[in-house]
Amino acid sequence: MSVRAPEISVVIPCLNEEEAVGKVVDQALEGVRRSGRTGEVIVVDNASTDRSAEVAAEHGAIVVHEQRPGYGSAYLAGLAHARGTFIVMGDADETYPVQELAPFVERLAAGDDLVMGSRFEGTIHGEAMPWLNRHIGNPILTGLLNVLFGVKISDAHCGMRAVRSDALPVLDLHSTGMEFASEMVFKAFRRKLRISEIPIDYYPRVGESKLNRFGDAWRHVKFMLLYSPSWLYFVPGLVLLFLGAVGAIVLAAGPVTVLGRTWQIHTLFACIFAVLLGTQIVQLGVFARAFAASHLGERDPWVERWRGRLSVEHGLAGGGVLLGIGLVTIVVIFANWAIDGFGALAHEYATAIGFTLLALGTQVILGSFFLALLTMRTTEPSRATVVERVPVA
Image 1 (tube, rainbow, N blue to C red):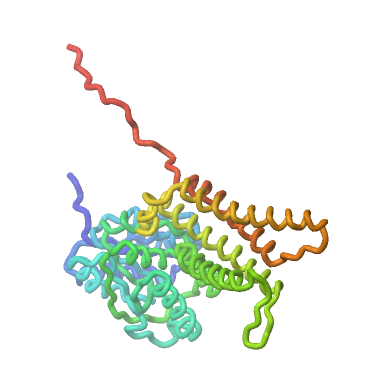
Image 2 (image 1 turned 180 degrees about the vertical axis):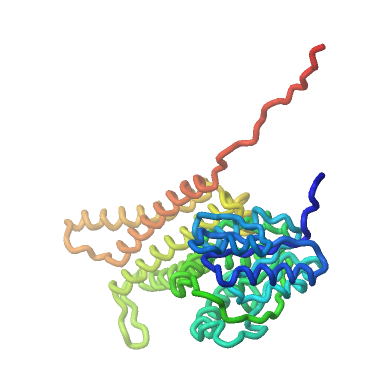
């Protein structure tokens, strides 16, 4: 006889929360009852050294043991065991009102894919959130997520949220640390899932906090930057490249006087540095986006648009043109220098530009080969012919 799968799975990560986890399980079960649906509560014990797992089981939870440390590791293990159509996520320290999960489930049942709780739109009770977290940390991290990924949300790191089980394969979550919270949100927006927010109450935690304020914040920032090549690479790289190129073009023929000040070859060197550095940064951004699209399953319209239009040969041609112009410039200058008896080099500015073009051409050519390697398919579709087998009598 098959056991019918529950409609709701409440997944709660737990690390040494013996004092609070039993009450949280009771609240989650109460929330399931209030929703009028069937459900289960899964507590993921993340290598606790107290009786957290035993207490959770005594209160009716299914206990999953995950030895790999990390907030994300615990959730990945819990989500893998969840059988419900609607998955509600909360913490084991009594900070979130999991007994009020019904509105989250109703939003999912109405068609939303991810429903976020919002502590800032709701009520933060007492000293539940330290001043630094409330007024600096969370607003900055949420703001970064909104800017870098086009997210529109008020509390990106709220631990009470709900997701449809059929949305999990689309999200394809991998993070093992606190950055798991950011990954879920930005992937949901990037992959066009339906998202909404519900104001919630946030209460002071029971027991000792496991958060590392600055370490966890850095993990979030690092993760967001890694998944945002446009801001990490293209914005600073293009700014450097543009400013350097303009300056180099202006100074190519020699010193220039602007606003009563003469800009000479030292300024040209700075512009050349900006051009080379900017080109390298932009190139790294192209590599990052191409690799993510080819090997990490990320959909990137920019990569898809240009993949069919540009090839290694285009890169070789462009790099070859730069290399050729630079080489001709250098050859002509050194030929004149030799004719003049190898005296003082009179074309310092043009020489600097020529070597810059040589460097850029080489960079583009080698980068084109590397980009082709990054986007190369590791397996080819099989061309084997299927032969129908005739059963032997």
